[in-house]
Image (cartoon, rainbow, N blue to C red; front, side, top):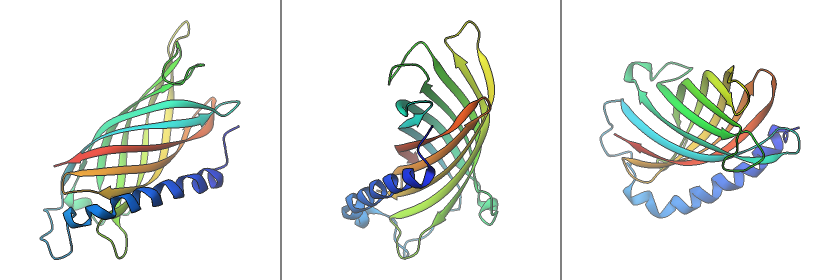
Length: 190
């Protein structure tokens, strides 16, 4: 059985604080309040390696996520999200960490809500709801299942185009016990 969300959150918060402290020297390169704001749209390309602690025994598993998202200015006031995303995720589902005969391949569409945090321009936050198809491979045939992921994350902005994302995701696939994923990754925005 996976660790309860509260325990996982207690382990993730120190990581977020460490990265925020690490980002402090970058404050001079981040956009400040007196600089002109952009047009309200951007495109993000992200690569987020992470680890799951799932299935019986809490074995860590590689979880590699790559995707692209586009923020739409007209959705800025939408309470659910302002950025539409597409992501591909590979997860080892067998006995290894990086790769085994069994794998999960997930293609998902999502909606992300970006929000600023008070008194800082270096760190912002986001929520991310995803839905898609997970394919289990390595057996006699491929099993396709619906995937639902809900994430909460922080973005550490190092410059206008570069940032570090840190997130905790609650994953649910029918026929599989829910599990969480902790990820940290790089994002290039334009």
